[in-house]
Length: 328
Ligand code: NAP
Image (cartoon, rainbow, N blue to C red):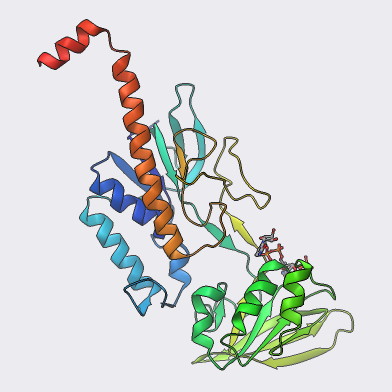
């Protein structure tokens, strides 16, 4: 088997991975960044970013390019590789097996595999993604000022983000497949009692419709009566769940009830040497800014961990050999 040894492996090349690469490269660590697809992560699904400090309006793709080039400037580029399994060897080193047979080995990992918003999987969803179809209210809400917005889902995200969207939309209509919200009572009440909101119960979206300018409306179906209807909206925010990408982690690592990996404030997990940054981490809010903040901390923590490991190894060297090394 083809084996590659490094001091640090970064898994994922979204904003967190790219920022980790920048700092690891800048610190001249022996690092590799593994990415299954093209770098960018969720950012590639974002048409326009208007909340990254210093860049008032930047395209998602353009920001990815800037971040990739910045990491490259410090010597780190994404290495293609779909991670299949991450395990830990008896000596504490991490083994990362890649589809196709290669293996990467390192004493430290910064895991930034992100998460995936669940799709509705209806016609029009892919076609109008970034053109009215979105999965993030904080990122995209401001693009729908004074427009009619639909929110899909009945959980905490739908209720909370839906209420947030009332700042922008002229109306926010929540469409839920049952007649009861799953959301916590306080979030549900806040949404329902807001003067700009309404709820369409027992209803699913059958199709997202649009034209060259983006979304124009939704084809709906009442699941109780079978009655079909249309709703005119220009923005559709889908909150039917989000899955952290943790399936490759083949070790027990502490996580919250949603599967997000728990860290301390220094991005350390329950496994020494395994650091986590970005959307896959258990935290209050998931933004590009939080991802890059996490990644910065994670790399400095990894560097400290590697130094401590190095110091311990040196301490084990017999005194005569240590003297010999100093003399060289
Ligand atoms: P969630 O709790 O899994 O809710 C997903 C919602 O989408 C459910 O109402 C579900 O309907 C609906 N749904 C799923 N698939 C669907 C489909 N194909 N078509 C139509 N509707 C569909 O997800 P979430 O709201 O993103 O929350 C995820 C986790 O984060 C939860 O543990 C939540 O408590 C937590 N969270 C907490 C807060 C907070 O405390 N402030 C805020 C956000 C999220 P059914 O109800 O019929 O299953």
